[in-house]
Length: 396
Ligand code: CAA
Image (cartoon, rainbow, N blue to C red; front, side, top):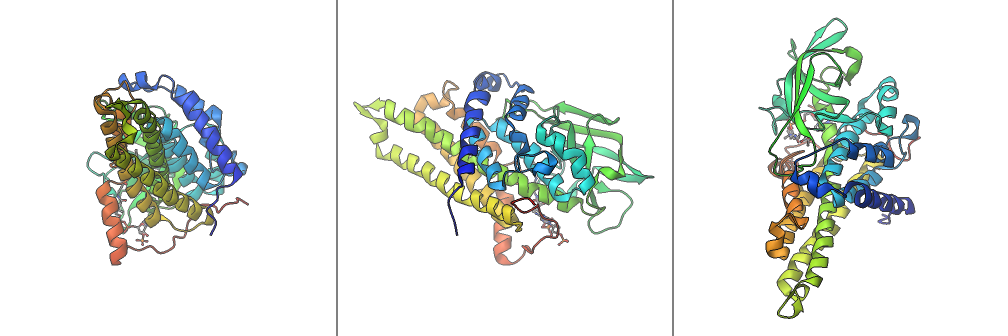
């Protein structure tokens, strides 16, 4: 067993830290206050090369391992959750799933532009009446000649108004199959496609979230990922990648809380003494350190399993479940340490508090991960190896 990160990992961490602090953070407080997203952040991320993380060089990617993707998510979310959300949907849910499930021709068709950041990818699973019970989706795909006609709607879709293409999970019409699902890569220029933004979010206010509507949208059959009947597995695979990025990003929120709290606790005095000397403040700082260090071990393990091509659904759920709770607790304590200032957007911790709450809902609620962990332990949930895995690292 080797716990050491490589020099390349350390360089990638430094690069991502600089992108976060120098490119993403400036102007964020205003954008967040005004609920304003823009494409500039995506363009900056593309220019920095992070949108091609963990994609093999032969598809135009950065050729880095999967742990590197986690490190980038951690450092970007240390600056801003909305940047990590871009990584989650573009790199995790969309590009890695394409890498896992695409035919060679599909990978050659789509991955180079995605890896370069010329095109941005999104993911459509959730519907107004199907969130945790993903198997209950009603968006239908009806086969018609050599294409499928898709009707329905998706909601809570990150990058709904910006992504050029989406991985959309549908229910097949006219089938009695046990798993009646199919997954498609859908181009937003397709007639019948439309999107609109969602307003009034508690957090991730500088990020774009919206709805997708499909009205008799005709998609060529060669845009299907996997075969008819594979759609649910494609969706669950996507979540193995998306949850990994959310988990890694959660460590970044904890680190950001520590950055803010260590500074504040050393500067702010009470009774002539820095509040950092107070044991109850120390207890909260210690809990943040605990969350950060345990969180890193959990997500590094998942990244390592991805490198080895091992199934990691259980471990990824554990990382996402544990880290998102630790991040929310850290942000709550960060507000506490800052006192009344923590209740104001003059300091960043109120944003961490709002943003960390969302991660306990999306990509599997806290309750779904609690149930999954219990079901694995009780023997109700299978953890058997899956046939279709990501390419192992180093990529051949
Ligand atoms: N990879 C590949 N295949 C998988 C898999 C995986 N990770 N997980 C399950 N499968 C396969 C299983 O092997 C099984 O196949 P067989 O029948 O051939 O054995 C099949 O898929 C069905 O699996 P399950 O029996 O485990 O399915 P389930 O119905 O019990 O799943 C659930 C229940 C785990 C709760 C699932 O519905 C779930 O994860 N729900 C939460 C959905 C979710 O996280 N939504 C978030 C939306 S995305 C989002 O939030 C992003 C955003 O925009 C911010």
